[in-house]
Amino acid sequence: TCQMDRTTPRCVPIKMTCQDLTCPPGSTCRMDGDTPRCVPVALPCQDLSCPPGSTCRMDGATPRCVPMAPTCQDLTCPPGSTCQMDKTTPRCVPM
Image (cartoon, rainbow, N blue to C red; front, top):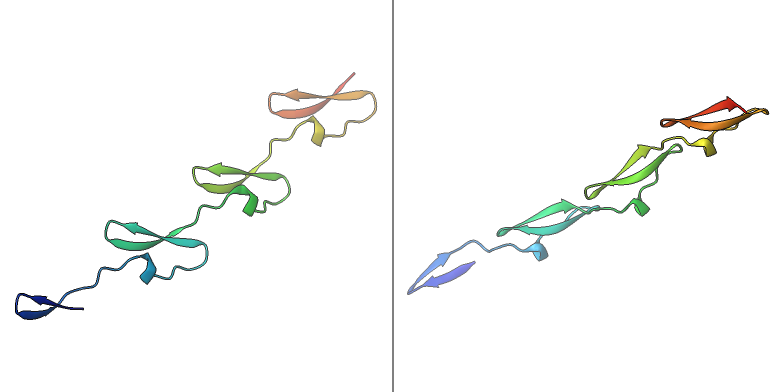
């Protein structure tokens, strides 16, 4: 843009803001000092669909699918046995 420096016109750069920047889907504009930048939007676990056998956990500001630790609820034992946890692993043991 043109600005007057006393009696002399000069071209000076326009300071950009987030209003001047269009960010792609999944990101938003944040000012980095005097510079607008597109940064990823932190999604909550509600917006992430995990495959069977995994669940969503937040890793800082990022949702991630992590394997679920199996429990006795995930194991069907044959008659005459019951499920007991062996550290982090469910096992069928005789009654």
